[in-house]
Image (cartoon, rainbow, N blue to C red):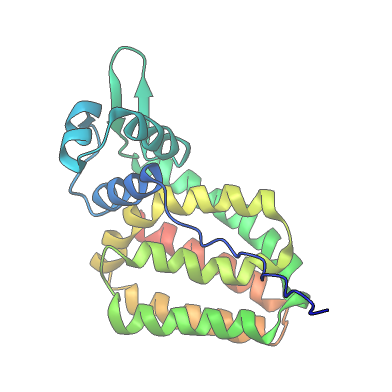
Length: 217
């Protein structure tokens, strides 16, 4: 009797939902400055612009609120958030506390693939988005590569939200102070220390973030 061949298990391909696509589109407009702090995000207008219903727009705005980019006020709708300098500095101080801790847990756990991924991101930053609105997103991807091996998912989630709130706010001051090239060099040095599992990487990261704070003062 012939043996029937069992079909291979189906492997689902993740597709972006409409709310996720809206989140990416609106976040890019906020981070690029097209939508400024204080601008109203009217659900009906967004739905019309993107040719969708108000339901995914409402969900997208909730996600953007969770990322700290939008404030939803009762009876007033959603408004894009612009952070004050003092707020940005406070968030960067939090980055120092949380990222130095998470890096210390990751240092002894790096695999070659983690370091290769981080290096490839740095190549892309230097080649294609040295001083572009995309820099903040790529900067977070680099740091995330260094932090994931820590297995501290809750801390990582908090740090990601801070990056999303501050990435676009520090890019312009860095450019104005001429520190973008220096920041790229610091990333390379940080990666080198991490590749060696050198505990000096933690203090180096602290100095790296502190230099961003100094560019704002």
